Amino acid sequence: MELLSGTTMRDRFATIPMYEDDPILGLNEAFKQDTRERKINLGVGVYKTADLTPSILNCVKKAEAQLLNTEREKEYLPIAGLPEYRLITQKLLFGIDSSVFEDNRVFTVQTLGGSGSLRVGAEFLSQTISQEIYVPTPTWSNHKGLFQGGGMTVKNYPYFNSETHRLDFDRMIHALEQIPSSSSVLLHVCCHNPTGVDLNMDQWKIVSELMLDRGLLPFFDFAYQGFGTGIEEDAAPLRLFADAGHQMLVASSNSKNFGLYGERVGALSVVCSHSESATRCGSMLKTLIRSNYSSPSIHGARIVSTIYQSDSLRNEWKVELGTMRERIKEMRKSLIASLSAKCDHDYSFLEKQVGMFSFCGLNSEQVSRLQHEYGLYMPSSGRINVAGLNQQSLEYVVESIIAVL
Image 1 (cartoon, helix red, strand yellow):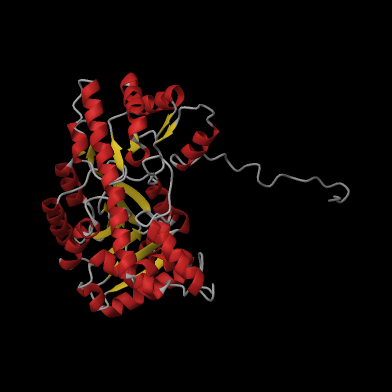
Image 2 (spheres, one colour):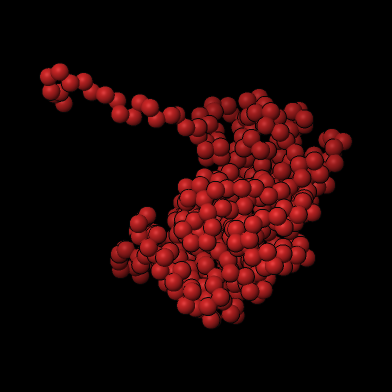
């Protein structure tokens, strides 16, 4: 480009600061650039098979084959998403006989993965109910950014005791009692990310009653349905709150339990007291989505809908999901057994952890050593993706952990 005489080209973007890589996704890039033959990625929460490779579920392949033969268009979806996918989401969350959708008290929109549902929910809350949200300590690293990006101020409440490696329930309850009424509170339904430590049903009942009494609004993050105990069992806390009469938000994802990570298949559901309120909430959610990404993607939602609407594919999905869940459980048991056999430290606390993640009690310095000296990649919090282990790599991982303790 030829510049006018006497002018200089000024770098308009020179003052933009350099931002750090995402603490989890950035690990993938570092892992790929590592040239060592022996390296293991225990970071990003993606399920891996026993040979540590990602895979596509058989039921997904069959559904895609059906779609290949039957799809006739790739038109834009409605702003709220694929209607059958939205209904399926409600049934998975609340049960097929729930009054929340029979009475039209819930409005569900399809979103770009679970992250998209959290961001849309944050924008919705910041413009309607409250600009403050309380999240557990610790929580998924991206929660803060998503809520702040949606216009909310993020505050914390205690959840995990790093000394006992267990749920700090008494401190959690005491903190919830101090939160101002009408504030929003983020709750992990199951498979808490990053600790793997969940509440039991008796504890959930106490939290439900407290939040009703205090007028607190639950915002549930439900990213791992089916990875804890089972599809129905994992949804029990959510259904407890719904039956108790809570008005609430639920950010859910089918990216994990259908293995559709890159398809970004999520949903946001708002449960209200009356159908009219649900309609009003739906109108606002659609307005927020329209001014953001306009409408969600179609392929992943059609895959989930095809599977769920077919008895044979739905049953096959449940079996495959069960296989993933059991492999994670077996690897956690093997990790506990190997750690316990090789050192004197008590690792029984790992038995209480469920889902894809585990906290082994590693600090950031030990995590750094594991990466640089042994090629083991995990977030600085010490969160381990149990699905990133297999029997062939287990001993090396355990010996490396012991070496840095």
